[in-house]
Length: 141
Image 1 (cartoon, rainbow, N blue to C red):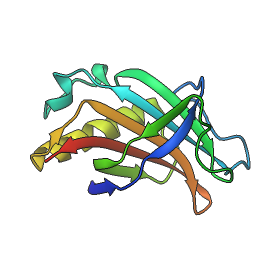
Image 2 (cartoon, rainbow, N blue to C red):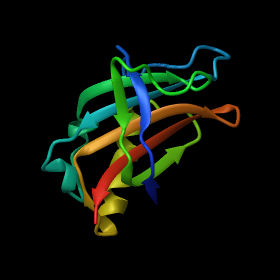
Image 3 (cartoon, rainbow, N blue to C red):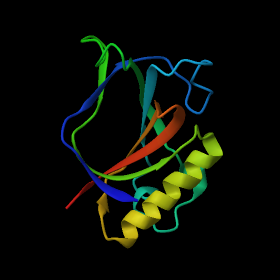
Image 4 (cartoon, rainbow, N blue to C red):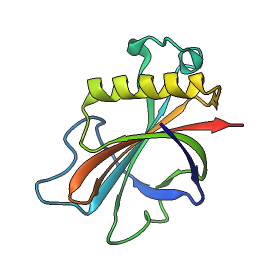
C-alpha cells in the first residue's frame, strides 16, 4: 500500500457496467473503467472486517476512452482529488480477488492509523500492455 495524493480528479462517463465482469474486449486497450462502492460504516473501520460486507453497495460505474480524454459533460462521474490508500495488481481481478485485496488494503491502512472513509473506488485500465486493477480508499489526516 502506498499513500497517493491525487491532485486532479479523474473523470468518467456514467455507464451501466457490471462490476467484476470481463471488461476488456480482446485487443482494446483504450478503455478504462471506474466503480465506486459505499462500504458498511461499521465494517469500513474494522481491522477484521467480514468479507460478506465487501465491496459494498455500488454507487456508480463509469468508463472513459483514454484516447478521447475525460468523460462527457453529461453523466460525468469522478474519482475526486484527495488523499488515498492505494494498491494495485497488474491483472484484471475477479470479485473474490477484489474482496481479498480491499480487505488487505483496509488492514494495512488501519495499521498505519489512517482515518479511512467508507468509499472504495476500483479502477481497471491497461498499462504497459497489460490489464491493471487499482484500489483507492480515501482517508483524512
